[in-house]
Amino acid sequence: MIAIDTNVLVRIFIDDLNQTQVNKSRELVQKAKHIHITQIVLIELIWVLSRAYQLEKSKIISILQEIYENAAFVVEQKEQLLEALTLYKNHSVDFSDCMILAATKKANVDHVYTFDAKFARLPGVKKL
Image (cartoon, rainbow, N blue to C red):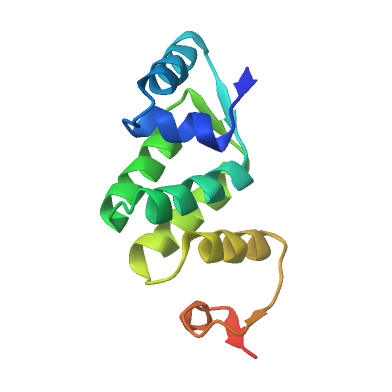
């Protein structure tokens, strides 16, 4: 098994201007049997896709679903990704907030407190 950083993962899904990096990233994934993806890489991925590449939420959701469903990707805390993905699909909040809520639910935390009004709309999150 190998692990990849966010910049490699981005180029697997996005045809970047640097075609050499795109090709190297895709070749690496094709040769590897299993690719470990950490939670922080997923969060960075979504930030890069939404901010730098300005992808629509529907496209980002498709990429997350592909990562979740593809057996080659070994996702850290995979069940938390699924919960975060469901929250992200159904609410107008940042993916990172969805990951925070999924992680705190697993830790049996009663509530998450925030100053973020959008995040506070989710069940289990309270505005401070």
